Structure formats: structure tokens, C-alpha cells
Image (tube, rainbow, N blue to C red; front, side, top):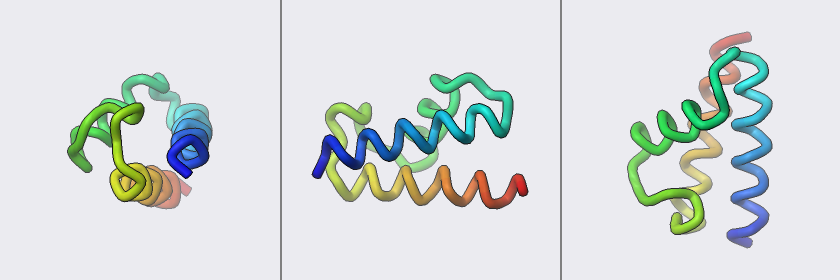
Length: 63
């Protein structure tokens, strides 16, 4: 489950990066700052879901 959530987060960050023009790493850093917690490799399923939801929120607001 964690591997799938990490893949989903990475994929969403990539899409948002393309949409926003911000570098991939900057988005990961920002979502981690906003949501808290450790790096994605050490994050729990709940933390990863929270980050996914936050990136979805950001992407939706840009449209």
C-alpha cells in the first residue's frame, strides 16, 4: 500500500509541476511543509494520503 501511495503522490506532484511550472522537488518540499511529517520514504499511509489530497486541492484551484 505504501509503495502505491508513494507512486500516486509522485505522479500527482509531476502533473502539478507541469501545470504550475514549479520544480518537482519544490512541490514535494512545500506539501511536506504544509502537511508535516517525514520525507515520503518514511511517511505513513495517512500522511501520504493527506499530501495527495493537498496536491489535488492545489491543482483544482489552478483550473
